[in-house]
Image 1 (cartoon, helix red, strand yellow):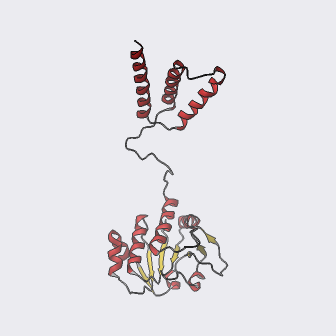
Image 2 (cartoon, helix red, strand yellow):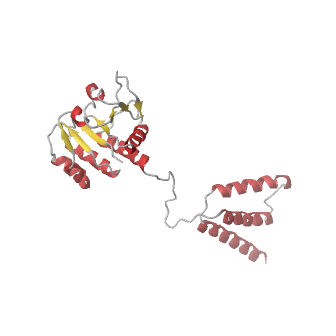
Image 3 (tube, one colour):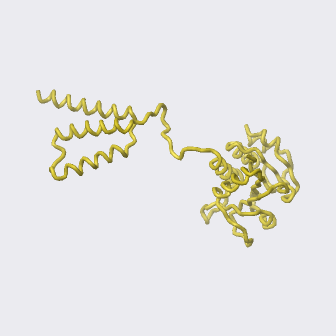
Length: 245
């Protein structure tokens, strides 16, 4: 699968180029192209900011203009937050990288244009793109710096190409209790509560038990937590028995 090329158009500060490189490498992207950088190339400030991603800059392509930089691309996205008077599809970063993944899987080359820090892409740049990518940000403060924008697009690319669970239990040695273990805990609780006269009045007892079962199922308990609850109940029962002697 061919990765999309991140094309920095007339970037003004070396630090921002370096930040974009770091953002790209965070998500496994290595195809950077630089169009007419203001302070020339190579740029020592970009290398310093890139830190461990300096090797990405070593292989970055340098181009005099946008048409040359996208000449081999089959499809080009232009990132911009400003309203344009150009008739083009406008997509979110998520949709853009979904499309990029599909095209890359077919062997097509995709380019993503990022504009200069001061004012973003010019209409002449956007006119060369197939679609516009716009982030749903605060309309009163829509500005994203170059590194942020590269990070956002890189994240969406990685998310489209790597299967990652949307939610995991991030604790070491987590072992969830089986349903039978939870049911036994529920039985134990009901036994103790019944002995304490909790299920009263009798006509509401069935619904009270049902609510408790629903609560236990909703808690996503681990095996260790189930054992802890059993231990608590046994200790309470032992102390009550001892006090009654």
